[in-house]
Structures are given as C-alpha cells and as structure tokens.
Length: 435
Image (cartoon, rainbow, N blue to C red; front, top):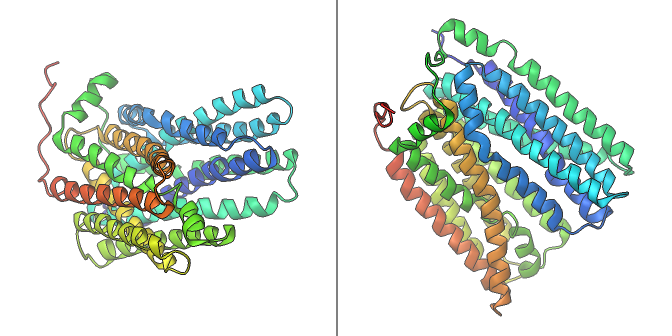
C-alpha cells in the first residue's frame, strides 16, 4: 500500500535542506568572520545583517499560503532556492566591495541578506509543508530527523570545505567558491524535487487547491482562529526563544568563567552539536523504528532535560576552571536535539489538522514564530548578560541567571506541550466562514 512520501522521497527533500544549510552557513560563519577579522568591521554589523535575514522571515506565512493556493510547492521551493543563491552570492560580493566603498558594500549586503531571508522563507516553508502534507504519520519523527540532520550535514560539510579552500584568502577566490556553492545548491535542489509532487498528485496524496481561493489575510485569520494552531504558535516562540538564548553567551561563559582557550571554546561548541546529533538520532530511531514513546512525550522530555542541563551549567559557575562543563553542555545539546526533532514532527502532524489546504499557511506561521524567536532569543540572552554584568554582579552569577531564566522557559514550554499536544484534533473551525 502506498503511504505518500517514500523514504527515497524524504531523503531527496532532505537534500533541499542540505542546500539551504550550505548557503546560509556562508553568511553566518564565513562572511561574518571576514567582515570582523580581515576587514576589521564592527562585529555588530554582521550581527545586524543576520538579524535582518531572520526578521525578513516573518513573511513565511505568505509563502506557505502561496504554495497552498497553487498546489505546486516545488515551484516555490526552487524560486526560494534561486533567491537564496542570489542573496548568498550578493552577500559575498558585498564583502569584497567593503574594501573600496563602505556605502556600496553595505547597500548590497542589506539587499543580499533580505534576499536570503526571502529565499529561506519561501523554500524552507514549502519543503516542510510538502513533508507535512504527504508523510505518513508513523514516519514523521524519522522524516523530521532525516531532514534536520541533512541540513546540519550541509552546514558542517560546507563550512569545512570552504574553510579549507579559502586559504590563502582573496576576494576572487571567495567569489569563485561562493558561486560554486550557490549554483551547485540550486542545481541539486532542482534534481531533488523533480517529479515528486506530480506523482503524489496522481496517487491522490495531495489535496486539490481550493475552488474559490480566499485572500491571504483571510486564510491567516482562519488559521489563527484555530485554537490548537494559535497555541502551538505561542509554544514555538517560547521554546525556540529558550533554545537560542544560550547561542551567543555559552562560549564567552566558558572563556570568562572556566578559562577555556579559543580552541577549547570551539571544541565545546562541536561537542554540543555532537550531543544535538545524538538526541535527534535517538528520537528518529525510537519514535519511528521502535515505536517507543509519542512525539508529545519526546517534546516534553527534551524540554525538561534541556532545563535540567541549563541548571547544571549554571550551578557549575562557582566552581570555575576544572569544573565538568563539557558533559553538561553535551547533555544540553542532547536534549535540545531531542526536543527539536520531536517538535518538528509534531509541527508536521498538526499542520494537517483543521481546514484543508492550509498546511503551508500553518507551517509558515510557525516558521515565522521560530525565526523571530531565533533572533530575539540570541539578542535577549546577550543583552541580559551585559546588563547583569554592568550591575556589578559576579560574572558567573550574571551568566548563571540567564541560564536559569532559559531553564524556566523550557519548563514552561514543557507544560504547554503537555496541554497542546494532548488535545484531540478538532473539526475545521467555522469561524470566519461567512465573511
């Protein structure tokens, strides 16, 4: 019996996520370093540009809505990849222009990072909507694991290869490498999605577009008036704010409080990502392969475990150098990975609840909440640390206080998950039906 997306289809859609990660990491890692180190620009500049690309992703609901209406999500996946590729190359070109004209380099960079945000929003939302629409329920946890790990693989491999090829640095070398990465990503994504959606339509696994399409604002209002969709949006923002709050402060904490060298701090980040990988893998194998636990249980466990790990990291502060920080950080990564995959799987499941032909709009709404939380969480964590350190609070207490706030947010998210994900799916809401 055919159950929608096959494992091969899921792997192919995971390749799109790989391509997304490959281009985005150039802007968040390689170009960030070049602006700060080689060009001696203020660190806040790349930070604001990255924040811009997150902010632009507030458009995700509209991209999801467009893919719902057309019934051809692959078109938006490829258009998004093209915009992302143009933005990635434009961002690299902007870096090379900073050497001769700051104004010209900044202008191009702003346009490029805006294009990156639009591309990630259009392509990423459409991929997740397609997965949510056509993945069998029992495969959702594994599908979330596969696609997320493939995105991480794209980030890791691209960062390593580009880092090796970029030495010795020159603007021409940067542009050549970026052109290869962005062009290759578009071609690979095109091959990856070819024919999948057409076959699903023939087999009856895809909903037909609405006979009388409604305006975007009407569709978004319909989704927002679905109690479960609205509550899950709040859950996504809350949990992802907690998830990203430590992103900008964990390595400085290791250096300032535990006397980690720059190399040790980088290794700490690698250890954390290793924990994330293991947590994601565990949920994918247990929930899909072994049928152990529901997604609701894995989400709650991931949130609670993340809170416990953050508590341990905060309590290690007074011990200073020599304290077992690395195991605690690996534990944080492990439970973060567990939570992330289970939350994505739950998102895919809930996207199909309520009114039909709104999967993309729901995924877009939740994707926008995640993107805003990513920018807000990171900046909020760093700002709170600066504020607390400026009030003459001991360094380890300043960082520890933020980690405890983050732990409390995770516990709040776990309580929300227990309530939201246990609700029995409801019939489509009649609200706004007569408007």
